[in-house]
Length: 465
Ligand code: NAI
Image (cartoon, rainbow, N blue to C red):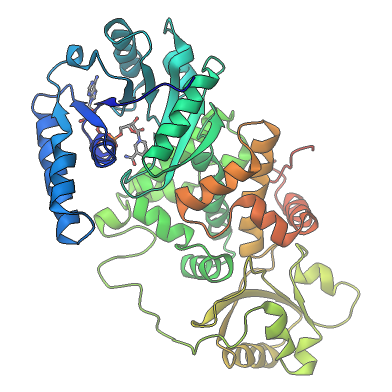
């Protein structure tokens, strides 16, 4: 039986508590907000007033609906006032001892059928629940920031969580206009784990001098349909937060080399270069890095094969789209120069110019210049990068797919839910399984296999299945 939910208690009136409270109130739930700090919940209620006002000003909500939503938000001055809640969402400090103490207290106060949820992003849901008498009604309900806008909710189950609890939470998330995905308790759940290679592999390429920050970002945006490049995203989220998330997942997986935190991020954090919030990260934000110094016409082509077809014959016959092998490997025994182009995960939109990485072996300077010019005439900016397996897009994609394969093997979520989570949680154009479908398993295997020959740390290990 699905449990009826009407009254929600939100504990912790910080960034997430504020958003979750506003969201629930907007969708018709009676909400009670509690914070351990005196006056904090009331301050947050005032911020919700301002946020609702803004929605009204922007025409996204009627004044009547905003008033009605606000009337559904009450401040609780003690935990005892939350005794009648149907559902508790905890969004307090990320500390397991404090969370455990809170839930032990709530168990004693609340009704026997209350559902207890944590919004933790990095702690084990099972460990938070370990000392509860009724862990069957406990789960993770992981909203993304800002909860009012982000469509995804990860519903995290432990071995003890009942089907009824999970079904109720999925329905609850849907009632808030969200898309829930099912994930079993495991480090980083889906998004925070499966996104690690997006940053990690880009950092590895940078660390090994394969390409610059701007090139890696430009290629992934253009060829991968990622709305932001990995370095732009790290700068946006904050290097300190990115580092903490990486270290947490790395430690949770017994320091597996595929999650190894990059010293480049640690060095920048030590130098207080934390990203956008401080004005400097991988980019500087005081001189408008967004401007393109060499604008090209919109691409007249949508695929790498078309670029090759429009090249002069003597160049075209040396070109290949990457299958994971390097230009040097392909050139061996051929006696002529080889050019390898990076892969696209989806066709280029033809209303803007495109950026494409290539590597070459044995190409002379004149041929190089002719190649770049012939592509520029098609609206495609070619950037030469180090001749490494998978170049940029294929390589990062291969690692994203690989992590999803590990996660599927471990049974933490379905392939469909992983795709949904990566699209909605990170605004990726494609989830890892959709990427695999586009690229084919052979190219992924070859890229990882060749990368493993270069880097023998175990970073490029593949699941056995
Ligand atoms: P925050 O630091 O903005 O707010 C935490 C609030 O909890 C503070 O107001 C604090 O006074 C209060 N608090 C601390 N101990 C308490 C207790 N024992 N009882 C009641 N209130 C208490 O934190 P934020 O960013 O809102 O994160 C909250 C939770 O949500 C954490 O578990 C975090 O991992 C998770 N989360 C955070 C996201 C983010 O982007 N900030 C995204 C998704 C999850």
